[in-house]
Amino acid sequence: MSFAAELPIFRLQFYLTANYPCSYLAQQQARSQVAAPGGLVDTVVYSELMRLGFRRSGLHVYRPHCDHCRACTPSRVRVDEFRPNRTQRRCQARNADLEIRLKPLLFDESHYRLYRRYQAARHAGGGMDQDDREQYRSFLLQSRVDSALMEYRLEGEVVMVALVDRLLDGLSAVYTFFEPGLEQRSLGVFGVLEQVRLARELNLPYLYLGYWIADCRKMAYKRAYQPLEMLLRGSWTENPYG
Image (cartoon, rainbow, N blue to C red):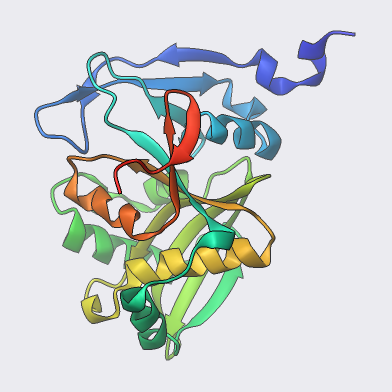
């Protein structure tokens, strides 16, 4: 019996994109290695690809494969050993009044409007601030893996939404957007803390946080969640950068 007939990951092919402007490092060109066909990437296959440093955006599964740069480093938190620091505990206390629900990947107009406000405030001029409803659906509501939306409400109003994937060995934090006028609540921090909590409840050992880049300020927050592991030279190892 052919192993390839039994295991979809053996039937995947990988191709390189053309160069495109890097989203994280100014003046840099990036390339991605993309897994295809995407229809074979279910939860089991994606779990293995995640361990190899892949991520997904909608139905596209990829990992950085730049010609002259290896700055993007996959990262994950060891859930059982994580203990919130004082700042994080204060964040939890500030947001104890939020109502949190897990919801399926269905379009919700209030989510979309929040997404547009978030993009306009945080990423104006980047293109995503102009996403229409179909682009929003394609980016956040299309998945072939086990995915859900974590919805956060304050006094009945949606203030944050986080897209998470459930893998065989952890949760993956895919994308989070929140009300830009509530900076004092540190909603982004609270979102990560709640994903750690959910992973622990589900008896999953890791929360995958995506790529850490030493020279990118907006990626620096990931170092606050310890113990943090990074995929270096093909092996997951505790963060050597402190």
